[in-house]
Image (cartoon, rainbow, N blue to C red; front, side, top):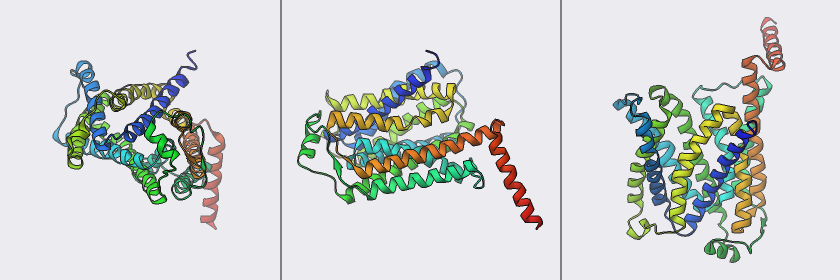
Length: 355
């Protein structure tokens, strides 16, 4: 049972994120404003995390200088507030399953940014380096396929639905135009880009402020304030701020408490036990779970282009992860084949120089 425990926890994590895509889409379908949603979600996360952080880490909290505070403020603005607001707008133009498919680009975009910031290296003359570059190329091809090629639509189980308005749109063949679809995919990629930038820059901020839990709580608090001002700027109707007892409140509570609070802790546990690569390799589970739920529960229309693009995205993700894993094995000295390959490449370069 102990051996299977990490996989079971990973399955729970990816199920939580699948629920995040589905419930967010449902909330937007019933008229929830995306900017108001982000504000309430972050407020719920702050209310959930702040008491725990204050109770457990008030005595061990590292000093917070003004310079570090500004860094955390900008990090929250870029990686949380902007990313979630852009994601919300993108989701109104696309589908939950597409959002899950695009999520597979996050590890690849993060790797690409890490290379730009010289936190990662790519050796093009080795097989891991070639696989990494190939993975990035496949992800770009997958994103382009999803955005530019839609193909025939696969209409499955239209009689099973939970949200009437969404079902009526399908029945009436109200399918987003190509321009709207491309806009949604582009915004989804932009959201992943800001999120990946947050992941990369957070490594540097953690060196100045090493408390992960307090940093997360502080970022949630700052993003709540930022999201409030964004929502006030775009939403002037007081009726759009009302929640009531329904799917809106459920979605906000779920995203704020379960996704931000519980999923964060579970991810930290899995990374500690099995490493970040193990967690990243299970990302496609979100796509599988979301697609199944969207099809069976909401009768969601899936295009052939989305299916083909999803395969390319997942293939690109695994290429990058394979290259990353082999390089780590080489650095630990447990992959002699790659070491021999590098020696051969270096010897070939020396012979060319002598000649």
